[in-house]
Image 1 (tube, rainbow, N blue to C red):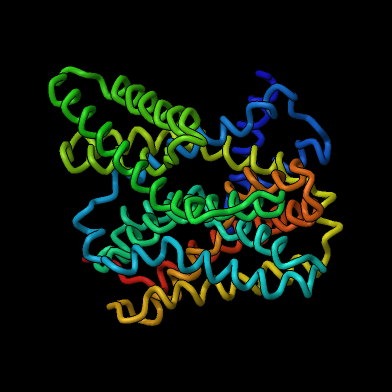
Image 2 (cartoon, helix red, strand yellow; image 1 turned 180 degrees about the vertical axis):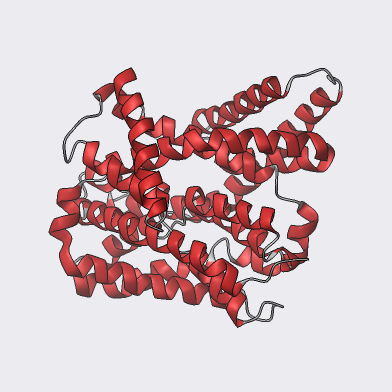
Length: 394
């Protein structure tokens, strides 16, 4: 295991640095390196690491969402208002609807199977989007209209919405009945996640206020432990009460920023340092979960579908931003920033196959291709258009 972790960190760091010098997104280098050392290629990663891969990826997501929460000012988010709420579900719905329309023609699958596929590929990746929005906030680019905050908040809730839809669609495919209660899980999961995050953030805020001599490193450990407890609570309540642990993690950071701004800024800097290693771990492990053979077999049809539905997703973003103060260039940037897919697709792309559903292989294939196409495309788009499309606040 230790040799595999050394390979992941050193190789991922080298691959990211190489792609940065080539003026390409470092995450693309990490993804490709993960594919090379993964089971579908040279199989250089120990099985014990692959077995806990999903948990390691969740730890990386916790770090980036904590960092996001500690930098997300509620007063700035309130200025955005209605579009922030719409961005949580409208673009994903547009992409799923487009998949249901076009996938049966391109991939010869049923409408229900197309809905399952749409739910898998519709989730935006916070791991790709959030670090870039945080960087824009540090540069004060687009912050006069709270554009990074809008994208960051929407991307974090979007995943909850899509995963609940995926669960409902796969239940239908397995012959289960889907009631109104199934879809009620979406708002319940969001509300419970927010409530848990607010409660825990308030408790930690009082704890930190009463411990002035608490070392920053100890505060980081406490925050991480509380976050892991939230995810554990989500797992324990599965089937009883839906709760979004990752959303709770971000809300916990938001509450700490509101009550202890100076300490939150300091903690955010600490998590920025942790993200250097977590980013490598996340994207290399996403790469190891990719089956290159499936991607090669899919061919033109799957790539065409991913590109077509991405256009509809961008259209959904433009719908959300109607009657806002954003100009055409800023709206285009928001649409580009909402393209990247990675973590959710790696996590649930193989589930239909493991369930024995006939659409399992094609869903996994399209999930793989959506990562390989949209993650670098979206990251490259954000990195190379931000200075041209967004104004820097003075």
